[in-house]
Structure formats: structure tokens, C-alpha cells
Image (cartoon, rainbow, N blue to C red; front, side, top):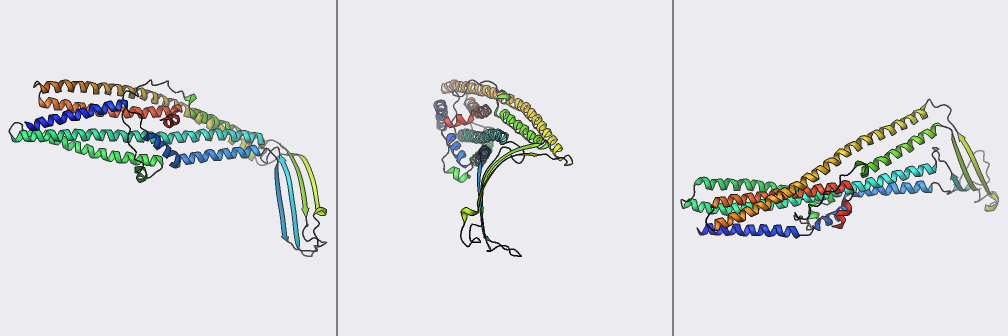
Length: 445
């Protein structure tokens, strides 16, 4: 009987720890470890680094297009030996200096520098958005794998607590079986349940290890390096996350819709480029040029730099037109128009698919929110039920096995709550990602 009393006391201690953990979880602050993981990912993730590099390249190309509209100063100097047969030079030494200031209002492809600048600006806007989108996509992966890892830690702890309680129960029943108070069937039932739990715990251990490896991969570190950061899982805050779901996100307001728009604008500029190549091309070129030659070791065997130099300038209006090319330029123009239509059609379908995706995100957010509320209410009811049954057991009005059955129900309710809680948190992250607020939310925590 003393063993039974000790086991009952152990159950009360375990339940007190469970209740205290839940109360602590209600009041706990959001884990700082997710913020740390975000900072690590920004420094080490190859995906984020590549997205930032693409944005940097697009910005430099935009600057090139801007400064191409201004005059360019070029210097070319040659010095060396030269010979011919029959010999016409008094000395084999040759020197030449060419300094030119040149501005072309239309480039060689007959695409005005202003139009090229506008195209590069559209491209820069698109790549900048894509870079931010890829960064947030990677940070979403970091956040969701972190929540998966936190959930697996919580569920493993629950399974371990349940196994420890069942082991104490098994010791009590085994002692009672030896005293002839319990049957072999009662002992075997508990023993088989313990074995099943040990299998589940092993699976949880593998799940914890794999999820941690996924976090390391997402932030761009090895598992060993991430281990040194002392990352801890997030604690549940059931009364802090059940806020309003927010409005459904419209596809027209999504960042991908803006990316599609910039893609179509770039395709339109490419069509204009092909069109201008087809028609006559008018080019205005201005140039000031200083030319000097044979200023080193000249015929007079002395430098005569001032005497051999010339300064010229020109302003030319040049008309170019291809009269016959077997239809190459016409077909290039048509190809550009077909590509533009294809991009527009592809983007329209992508917007329709995006609308479905956003609707699914919103509905699952609402569904998961209700699951959290329901499982939380179930957990509260199981706690109340156990408190009543525990009082009846103390007064001798409830059976011991009824108490254990109710305890198992309480632990299972906690497992369901943890699963729904972290599932809802993941869906919240996904909703913030599509709304474009994920990065700000993660940096504020």
C-alpha cells in the first residue's frame, strides 16, 4: 500500500509541474532565439546572399544606364617600334595619342539611352522585390523549421513524462500482482503501453534531431556550429496568439503581382527595341577629339608635341536602314511581341493561382485558430475533470484505474494542444509572409 501512496504522490507532483508549466507558458515572452536565428541566417544563408548579390548587380546596371546618357572621355596612347618595306620613315619609333570626348544620344542598337534607363529601372525594381521576397521566403523556412523543432521538443517531453508515470504505475501494479491483488493482464497492459511509448520517444528523438538539422541548413550553418549557439525551443503561449485573423490578402496587393507587372514592362521595352531595329535608325553623335602622332623621336630627332597635334570636332546626324536581310529583323520583332504576350499570359495564370493560394492560407489560418481554441478548452476541461476525480480518489469514492485513465486523457489533451498551437503559429508566419510583414515581425521580436 505504501508503494501506491508514493505513486499517487508522484502523480500529484507531475500534475502540479504540468499546471505550473502551462501558467508559465501563458505569461512567457516570445523566445529571443528565433530572432537570433534570423540574424544568423542574414549573415550566413547562401540563398539570402545570392538574392542580395542579384539586387546589387541590378543596382549597378541601373547606374550604368544612367551615366551612359552623359559624355564619355576616352584616352588612347601608343608608343613603340614600326617598320615597313620600302622604308618611308626616318625613324622606327612610333607614337600616337588620341583623346576624345564623345556623346551618343542613341546607342548602337538604336535604343535611346533614356529608354534603356527606364528599362533598367523596371528591372532593378523587379529584382529588388524578388530579392526581398527570396529573403523572406528563406526566413519563413527558418521560422517554420524552428517551430517544428520546438513542437517536437514539447511532444517528446510529454511522451517522456507519460512514460515515467506509466513506469511508476507498472511498479505499483507489479507489486500488487505479486501480492495477489492484481491480475497478470493488468501488468501486461501497462507494460505494452510503455513499450509503445518507448518506440514513440525514439521517433521523437529522431524528429528533434532532423528538425534541428533543418534549422542549421536554413540559416546556412553546420549542425555543429549551430549547436554552439545554445538555441532553445519556443514555449507555448496559448492566450497570447488567438488574436484576430486579419483580412484576406488580395492577389493584386501581393508582392508577386508587382513583380509580374515589372516583368511585363521589361518585355514591352524589349518589343520596342526590336521594333526600332526594324525601322530606319537616326543617330545623333557629338565628338571632340585631340590627335597627336610621332611626338617621340620624330624626323627632327626631337620631340615636337605641339607641332604634330590636331584638334577636331564633329556633330553628325546619321541615318541607318537595312534594306534587305531576308526578314530577320521583322521576325525578331514578331518574336519579341510573342514573348511579351506569353509573359503576360503566364503572369495572368500565376495571379489566378496566387488567389487560390492566398485563399487557402486564410482558410487554414482560421481553421488552425479554431483548433487551438478547441484543444485549449479540451485541456482545461481535462484538468478540471482530473481535479474532481483526484478529490474523489482521495476520499475513496473513485477507483485507482479511473484516476490513471483520466491522467492519460489529460496528457493526450496536452499533446493535441501543443500540435495545434505550433501548427497555428506556422500558419501565422505564412500569413505574415504573404502580407509582406514577416521580416518586420521577426526583427521586432
